[in-house]
Image (cartoon, rainbow, N blue to C red; front, side, top):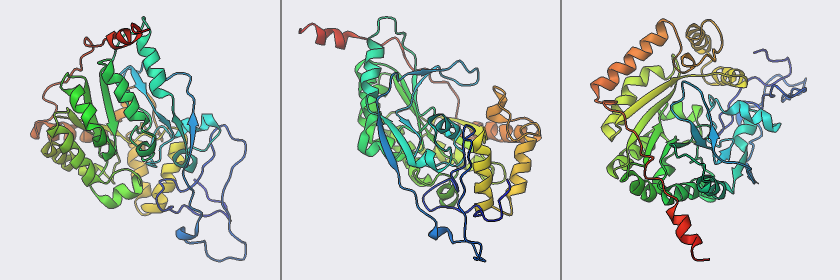
Length: 364
């Protein structure tokens, strides 16, 4: 990535993952901050504008998304929010903000959309006589427990509907806020209707603070795994993403720490850099690891067939080549050593029932 003569070089913004508001592939114009010609120094990071989070309430037209990707272990998902305040610089969902006419950079983590009618739409879907129950995943795109969930409680309202109809749910999150809903999850888990994956990228607070600035601290995520496990909620750890030369060295430690906290399953995903994410991650590397940037990018290229990113199914999750094989083998050995992934949990769909709605309608 080239920086123009008067453009600010990549620098972190406190509390945000992106260093810039990189334009989307649909924009004809490029926006970049500049400094005065007479200035011999660039402004300090603390002097740069600090964007505030703005949330728009959205009336969604549908709520259950489906996919047929062969390397994704679920067919249906719900995303209560568009955009994510966690600000994870590597988030593969960032390019989706371009469809809204917004930047996958800072806009993605500061201009958010909340689907306020999510629970209502979900109930209408479940009441459809043609609906066939299947595990619904919360957190497939953006985090269902990002900070604004504390106020809007849309995810909780979705869980309430799923519990009422005995519908299975799987949650993936980087937030300890999921423990707030442990009352619902505990009841659903007792019927084998719920499980939770807590995503852990690094156990080092300093690394996590820059990679995913508004997500829960690593220690809190492990504590959340423990709390959920003790409540009888099947809990796993998702090590995502694995970043070569930055977080890959922690692979075994994360598996061990999660297992000690009560996790019974684990999975990992290699760093993915689709579309605008590649440029955003490059800026992040220059801002936080300038001496290591070329090495990280070289290793990524070797695991992606010599390209910045390879979107081929299956290998997009784990990469190819010697280094990718090494990570795969290390993960497998770590799981075996810690007794993780010994059996596959299958959530029940046979308990799904519309009786609650029929009972209610009979009153009229």
